Length: 452
Ligand code: HEM
Ligand code: 2DC
Image 1 (cartoon, rainbow, N blue to C red):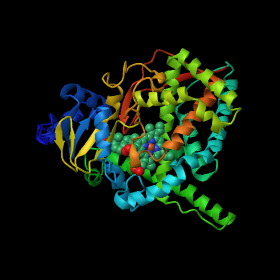
Image 2 (image 1 turned 90 degrees about the vertical axis):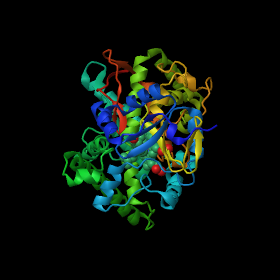
Image 3 (image 1 turned 60 degrees about the horizontal axis):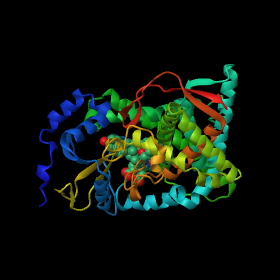
Image 4 (image 1 turned 120 degrees about the vertical axis):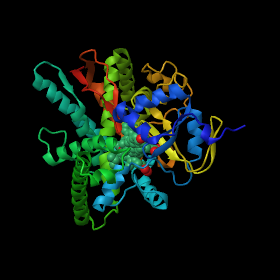
């Protein structure tokens, strides 16, 4: 017999009290750990209400499969209120990220052809390879300048620039020049605005942004300033390209402007932080680093330097990236409003309910992954089952639009780094995640790069 919705365990009866407790636990920064704690307390399914968000939370891959089968024709995830509030406030259009229904689908179909179809991937491999090579040149230069035959630094700023250079070169077919010594202050401002935009989103997730706006709160003002900076820079890039396209051929590709802005903004912190975590793990596991290097060297030989071909011979590098996203996912959860009634863990869940898969919690659950605390890229080489376990980019038609770009960009980066440098860790630091809308390291990660 199926148990009713109202019997799902959890704290969902006192939403204001829950919000207060959440705030007291520093929930804005610890959302991922609070979710782990809740699964430990209530089991594999719990119901929750914080402020105005009500959801059912699940952790099992088998339950994720049920969820995604019920996502319907127009999958809808949790609306990030501050993001839509900004666009409404400034009268700007929504892009695919925030659109819904048929409007979302028709835009997404066009964009899929431009950025996610396997056919188009061939086009951007050479572009990304060039950026990867320039990054290597830049690191060599830094090493030489240090006079110590090594370079010790917090790579995050460098990785932001690498990521933005990569995504711009794919979107516009043109380089911004971010691997050079002098960089345009406007571009640096754009990068800073993206980080500020994420940071100012999380405190506003559970409080209506409208209210914060009327109160003239600082977090809302900072958020507006951040998006203004993002849209202004993106508009400049788009204008420039339109001009050139008109001059070249008279024909203009019709990109929806708000979608391009989202692709630029979505393509910076996500890939760069994932790469930073990967380098951190490789620095902590020197033997594994050598195994990956051996794989890359061999792949280079068998494919005679053809990058497109090389990408087919690096299963361990790909496994490492999956392993990074398992332990350090960008998104703390995946969510869908279910389109039909479903049964999960023998509970009835009515259509329209917001169901969240705790992605961070699932990645660290010993019932899902053997010895979850260990960084083991080989677990993705078909030794363990992979059924609904590799979900870092989401799932189905609403999955990450930048997935192909992100994967290719990160694989090419690691190939180049492994071929040229040894990565070492300085002190015995144990970096953890903090929730700043996306999950980011809680402290600077200082790494040392040495030429091979
Ligand atoms: C959506 C993760 C990089 C643009 C998403 C989602 C996740 C995600 C989990 C939600 C998917 C779902 O609900 O099923 C990641 C990770 C990245 C990454 C882990 C890198 C390591 C990028 C890049 C871009 C991008 C490079 C842009 C070039 C987007 C957009 C959406 C999205 C536009 C919304 C798609 C839609 O609603 O139709 N991403 N992302 N992401 N991502 Fe990414
Ligand atoms: C944050 O409770 C936690 O890829 C919330 O590139 C639920 C939630 C909803 C949507 C998620 C968000 C979380 C994390 C960041 C994501 C976002 C959807 C897309 C976005 C996962 C899990 C991201 C980072 C995009 C951002 C593009 C944007 C900057 C233009």
